[in-house]
Length: 85
Image (cartoon, rainbow, N blue to C red; front, side, top):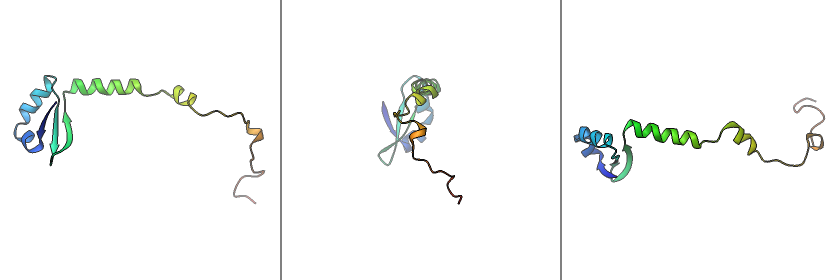
């Protein structure tokens, strides 16, 4: 991936976009530090789809809840609701 300073990318934005559209993302730097990446919309959408596919579903999250052997009956709960006397 080639790198452009923000100043150069602004001057040649059309060329940077054309390059990204051909499948060559461009990293843009500001003051010498990475600031962003310009890539084609198709590639961005593909990456978003991959991210969503890898995200756990509700069932996965529920199954990941730690289990213990105590039932609610054995927990130390107050005899009356908190805040009431």
